[in-house]
Length: 109
Length: 111
Image (cartoon, rainbow over the protein chains, first blue to last red):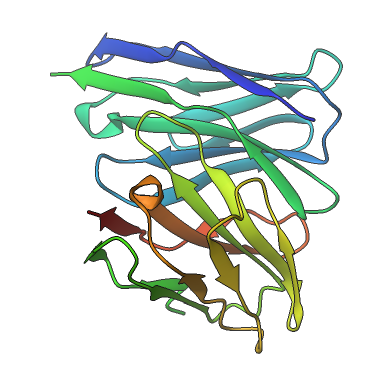
């Protein structure tokens, strides 16, 4: 069974800081997903990646398949980035997903 | 496209009552999923479907039932509601390793 761990569990940052959230998993996967959930809100997919690095605006996601590890970076953080960030892994071409417990990020103005 | 539409947004049930959570997607995705999210916990899979007429149990299926008569719809039925089913429920869909698309969630309280 694939276990997904995230660190840190909670993170408080000042506006403008560079933020890193980590995810590790135990079994080989077909893809890793980063999701964002605002308080009381729905869940939005940020990235899906199976190798290398992807960038969207101020967000960057990287994955190291050999080390079974991924990082989500936020540059120039802003209070609107405050949310729970969830790492999920999939295999069997989308038939199975396992989710991490989430990292709660608060960015203070 | 509306994406994934879930109804209702909120519901309070008494112990022993039944209800159906509706989920519909208009993206022609073959995979659909029902998850529950308990406070401070990760998403847990209740049931999933890989296409119309095909469903299978996930990690926490007890107390729930599903059907998938069309590609678009994947309702979740709660029979004999129990306090342990108090949670936030999310429906999601995807297509063969594509990103997951989530509905806005249903907040259910069983008292």
